[in-house]
Image (cartoon, rainbow, N blue to C red; front, side, top):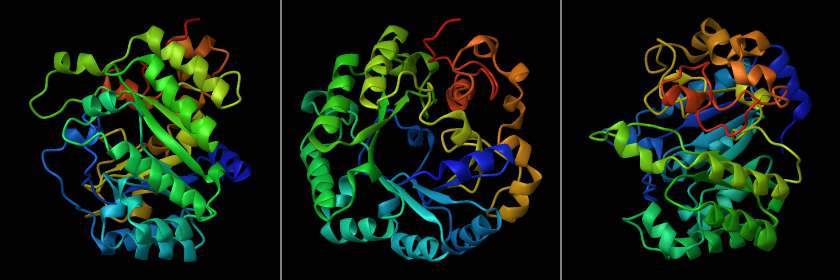
Amino acid sequence: MIDFKELTRAYTEDRFYSLQLEVGDICHQGCIYCYMNALPQSINSLTDETIYGILHDAIRLKITAIEWLGGEPLLRESIFRFLALARDLGLKNNMWTGGLPLQDRSVMKQTSELCRNGLVSFHLSTINPGVYKILHPDRPAEDIDAIINGIKTLLDTGYSHNHVINSVTFTGLQSAEDMIETMEYFDREFSIKTSLNVYHTYLRPGSSREDLQRFIPPLDDVALVYRNYTSFMDAKNLPLNCVNKQYCSATLAVLNDGTVSPCATIRDGCPENVNEYDFYDTVQKNRDYLCLKKLKDPLNLPPDCRQCGLNHSCWGCRSRAYAAGEGLFGKDPRCFRRT
């Protein structure tokens, strides 16, 4: 699924392996902790022409994979046309969906066909109906079965479980035990692994930082979830972010408003916007910033990270540090490890 040789080469050469491409911010799943809630309104602002140009520039930049993001990318009318274009250009398609659109057999079949050389990621942070209603107050708990049935149907088409992941977000709104149960369920029933994120502190319109404290899980709970997470992932230790630092560095993002950023969950970026400036030139001009080159020097890591035995693969989540006001190169506030 990941070409680790190419990923390592991209990291070493300060290039990019993957592009996170937000093709809109509309989503019906209603996760109350989602960073998209920070937006004043829902709008698909990247034009088809802009996306077309970005995909061709991705080839010029030697990018390997496109991470299709939203909101819900499968709600964009032209999405399958662009998935086909990316495939024909030789790019891997990685689809990051909430999972609800996969109920539609036509959507599921086209996604399966066009992402077969990449992955399909769905989002279901709990299988408990009561907890689901807390996390999605405007949605019915029946969404759980709808998402699971869509995944079952996807697997029934022959799509490999090794190319499916459940991308979850652990917040203070659910217990560590509930998150562990969810990860265990998909591992046991479908041999589907989990991509684990821990809540990012983003302000919403009309919300204060105090309002957001309820979303932040205690560090002891984060540690408990990670201890179990490593067992599901067949690893002794894992970076405290959704990917290792190599993938983090070798990834960049174009947000739905045209901002070019080091990561889609960093809601800030380069001065140049792709709605007005050329994507290729913007990346070349801002390459060191986008690949977080400063952190590749161990002396520039946050103090605790310099002494951590995992700093060969982890530098904490840059987005969580930035969102918490620690700056792009500050300490990850959700890190439970102490030197």
